[in-house]
Length: 83
Image 1: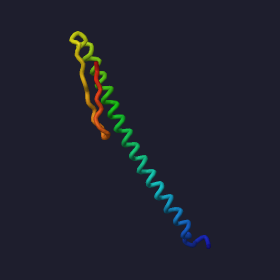
Image 2 (image 1 turned 180 degrees about the vertical axis):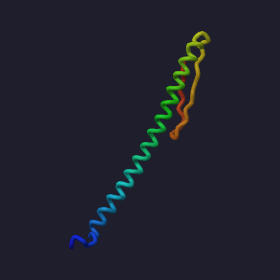
Image 3 (image 1 turned 90 degrees about the vertical axis):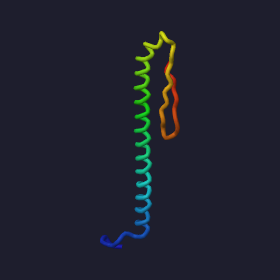
Image 4 (image 1 turned 180 degrees about the horizontal axis):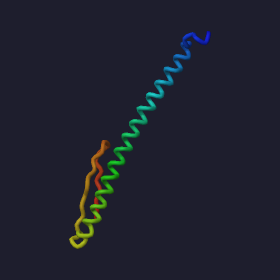
């Protein structure tokens, strides 16, 4: 086989497998990135609710009340109570 000849079938198969692997890896990394963005959004909402809850808690200590907040995710709903 000379320098200018087409790649062998074996070399082409190896490149095809590598390409398929890299495409799958890319999809996995994109999904992971989306999951991390969702997690970040949920965490921001929880922090925001907790900070708002601290403000409310200082006024509700006299009344003895608490609040429950639900956060929806692709995996289901998370409930947490701020007392």
